[in-house]
Length: 348
Image 1 (cartoon, one colour):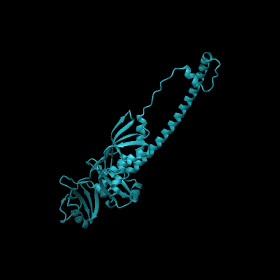
Image 2: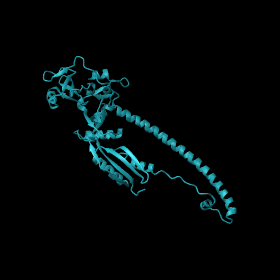
Image 3: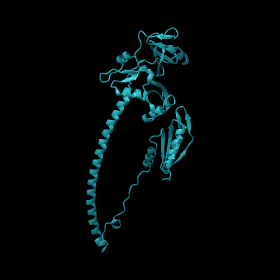
Image 4: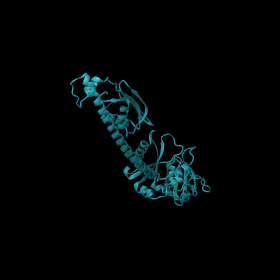
């Protein structure tokens, strides 16, 4: 496996990739509803939580590569915090060793590609997952898995396991698989830190510019106020003789100048902004949205992983002061959805 990593994996800063033993990396195929990146990571984590025998805070859940996946299917890796810490502290890229084995074709049903070396076998399943096992346990595991078709890529498997022998010329791994590295999340975090620093610089610059503009506006407004005051004094000297002009010039100016029409502000955007802020961290997606201007009501078709999530979203909206009317909710393999009519609690 080390030789295959050096041969097929792209190097980073001149360092060859290093395989992580399959015993340290569990793999799962999970199905989650359509969602954005942040929601998808949370959904994958919760889906894996039910299938690992360890507290969620003690492991790292990372999405892996899965070529030609069905919609909603994702490959997830689970490894301990200790292993992840050791991997990310090293400069060389790391990947699960079963990614160095190409996925066997599943045209005729489930299949295993087995790389046997001595008493140890590394298996890559046709769904993209993988594991390692002792050679003596392999026949039992194969029978329990329903006798999937076998391809021997390393040493021959023996007479007990009917396998297609490709050990003489084992096929190369998928380029998408060998391009994966556990170090990518660390680099993404570093890029996020750099982006955060640039964002902080931009915010500070914007604040300085805003304060400068505000100071200039204040000076200009002061000059305008002085000019208007002098104009008012001249105006009332003939029309309102004997009237003293004080700082409260509003009533006088209202009698001397025509009324101005002030444009009203849209009520749709504030409502949409307030609803979006409440649902920022909720596991929900919007499939359709409309707005009733007369009632200032949002009509939203929401999609979430389950009915409980939709009920929680409705309760969150009501707790935030919104009036919510829900239609009939439906649930399926892809999640649950319901149409909600959302308005402000006071009817505004």
